[in-house]
Length: 210
Image (cartoon, rainbow, N blue to C red; front, side, top):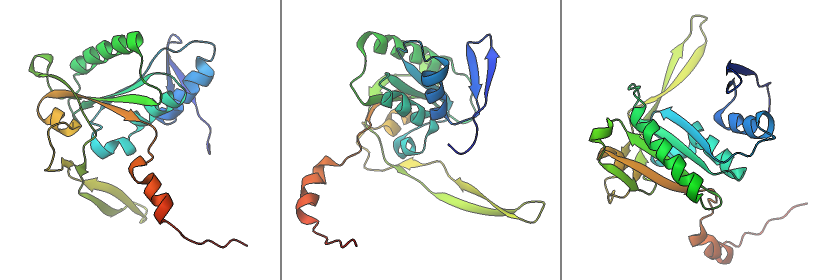
């Protein structure tokens, strides 16, 4: 919204690179490049790096799938749970299977799937689990440095997150740690319905507006 978006055709008009965010790619794909086409499915990823637990609130990969869901197109986000390994064969194989399933069965309204594949070869993956979003324990740190011109800059640093010890075995973290593919259905309505009515009853704050 604050700077121009540039697109580059990579391969015979079928692959287009955009210098915006992942969600920008969905908006431009649906509303511009494919505006006259019926889009059956959006697959965001395959991302190199996991999107587990609270990562879903930061993830560009998830953000693209959210954008597709808002546009009423069945959408999934697929991530390979590793940082340096670049063998995407197991992840792409499972993504294809999930795509076939969703094309035949669809997804509920305002729902997307967050899929994480463990950093294993096909033979070592035990299967898949339908999981809930876990809670990660983050230990972030802000690192302050000086650039060659004497100006400060910062890095957000920290260790890999760990999941809560009370994990009952049905979370995305548990699945990946135990060599299972994690499939977590996410809904876009973030309203906490459990406290909605009680807040209406209890929260009595008088506001004066002139």
